[in-house]
Length: 261
Image 1 (cartoon, rainbow, N blue to C red):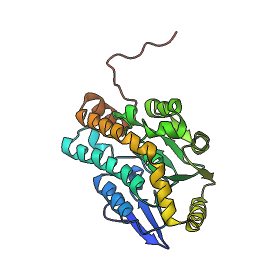
Image 2: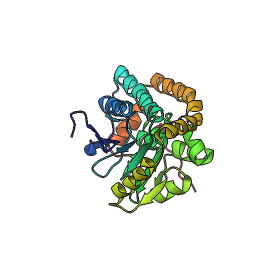
Image 3: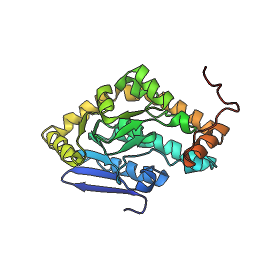
Image 4: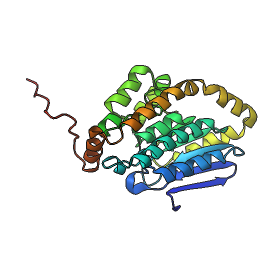
């Protein structure tokens, strides 16, 4: 494992970025996000980029531990670096494939949204966690996801924090392919072999052109991020994070909901 929890390797024209913090489901901190950005920015001469996780998880998004007692400057850096990360995926001139084996949650699900292609094993799951943990998924799930899976389904995902199986994600259009557990590498290599037959120059042109809706969403992402920054240290942020870490339901309201008759 690298010292920051991310390994970046280039072989046979492919840059492979692997998250290696399985003890926290590969949730990334600032250093990990910066390492991923560096790997993406160094991929201009590669044929493709593959982002994947380790230890049975893809990515649980940004590390939540600091939300319960946040350092405003550190959390601001994590939020703004997360925006740089998803934008680096879109700005990379090469196709970026999310190779998902296990949960893609919160910001990890937004990495899937940002990637050009996504291939998942049948045991993988997808979904957002924002309002459940005292945050909001403003870097893809509340905006670009509407283009990918439809507005009503995107709102269901981002507001209700529901989880979806790989087959459900495929049917929605969130991912491109589902393969049996243990066959992810074979499937990714098949996609890479197909990319190898295509013109790098015109792939780049096509990718730049395909960023229409991403570019249209960027002002919304920045505005959402600034709102999140203003809410750092709020009661809901602290309670949501503590409940998540303590594995209990959050108590965002003082009074319980009356039992239905």
